[in-house]
Length: 162
Image (cartoon, rainbow, N blue to C red; front, top):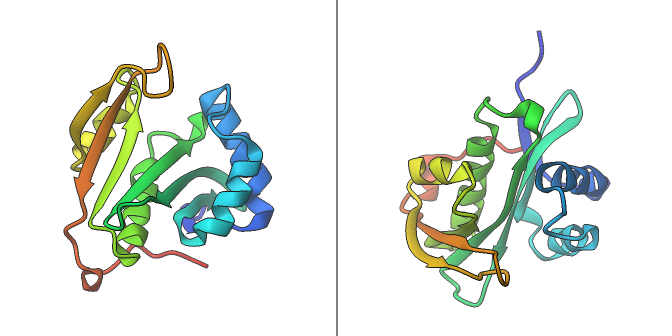
């Protein structure tokens, strides 16, 4: 019997696999490989991976900005062959818990209007706050979505391995 995929904090040894997932999912990677290294140093609790049988199936990367109550979902990716198992939802919920643990009251993300992930985000309570036609430049529209992180830490958390 195959064990269930487990979420854990990313390690330095995961960085190449994370970047390979980034490349596989997004084609032309949104973030260069060195950015994941820097993100791991800046926000070690906000770079999470999901693995099964010691193979990474996906990751989520969060960040903190100037607004000390607003956390960001910077990237979420699950390998195509691992989709349909709820892994993206599990990763996102764990990241939300980690953001809340750091004092964030809201989570924000951007997503292409045509990206099917919009349905996942809406189902999980993210609401459209803006549409920016050239978010990353000409021809790069993004929906800006935000969610209030109402839960308390005492309500429990998804299990995460360090």
